[in-house]
Amino acid sequence: MSTVTPTDWTTRPAPRTADGWIARAAEVAAVLATDAAERDRAGATPYAEVQLLKDAGLVTLLGPTEHGGAGQDWPTAYRVVREVAKADGSIGQLLGYHYLWFWAARLVGTREQWEQVEAEASRGRWFFGGAVNPRDKDVVVTEDGDDLVFTGRKSFSTGSKVSDVTVLEGVLEGTDDHVFAIVPSDSAGLTFHDDWDNIGQRLTESGGVTLDGVRTPWASAAGYVDKVFRPRVYNTLNVPTIQLVFVNFYLGIAGGALETAATYTRTKSRSWLHGGSERAVDEPYVIDTYGDLTAKLWAAEALADAVAAEGQKLHDDPDAVTPEARGAFEVRVAAIKSRATDVAPEIGNRIFEVTGARATATSEGLDRFWRNVRTRPPVTRPPPLNEALCAAPSGLHDPVAYKRREVGRWVLEGELPEPTWYS
Image (cartoon, rainbow, N blue to C red):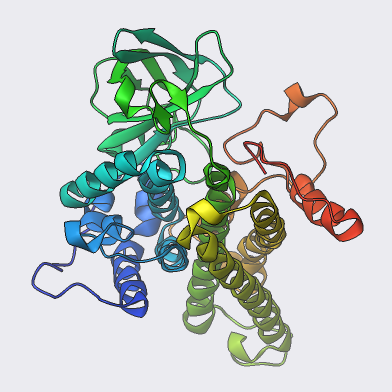
């Protein structure tokens, strides 16, 4: 059982500006930080943590104001994810995925569909999970009159037991057409397996899920009209949008690592007995390391914010998104994904150089930052030629070498990446 104690935000007016919501996220992070290490070790299902996000109003950040949402944009959502992830990378990831799945109807669906979903989700403060894993083509969607029936299994389902609704994805039988639909997470036939047992991001509820004849009306199939999918270029913006979610909870975890380490250095670290300084904070190599890591983090954050602002222009006018604009945005996202993937694990690792041997105590929990970013970001080496050998824990299936390739091909040949499940 989590020991998180929510602050009562119900008696205070909701923020009205982006800065106000980022400050609200920082308040949430302060609550989460009080027992983050203990909750990481316990690995319990984060019901209380998700309730905290609801109580603070963060789950409806992107929702329309007329239905109780905050009406904020994606750059604000990314900053909110980053703030929450400073305290707890798992909850930052859950919130970031929630934002994507909340927005999925707008990305893929018809106007009628997304207006209905966003209105109901905002009024009901739904928390979204997703059983979507494009490398697993083992969910088949069949027709049964006016219903669709999802049958199969997904290896990963982030949000699972803590979600109110789940985004399902499968392939329509006899076709190559993917179908997305939102169903209640307690739907008959939907079974979450509680088998997420990885070294980091332990509270993301990212285990497998079985779909045993999960039914939903044909009308809920996102983007389908009269059982025919109506494609738009904007549909393909789901990948760069979620990639920026990744970027921001990586950077949030890295920022939390630096802040936590700096507090430890100031209050607990001992200077090296042969170093000539009485305090650890006066040792030149300690000062240099913090300066180096902070400069790298600030640079990555600045690029992340700039790319988020560029993406918002596409979200502002979905029908005007061209393949060229989408491709150029994906190149920029690939660039910051590459930088964040390098910076975050480096910070998670090097904080031990400036905190000392005692900082490795389990009670301090400093290792969670490195474990979290090592679990989620993609590998930095090229993958084996045999793609079957690339299977790995969530996130390690998206090698950063291919992100750098997208940038490199654009620099050398002006080549824009083709939309795929990963680019």
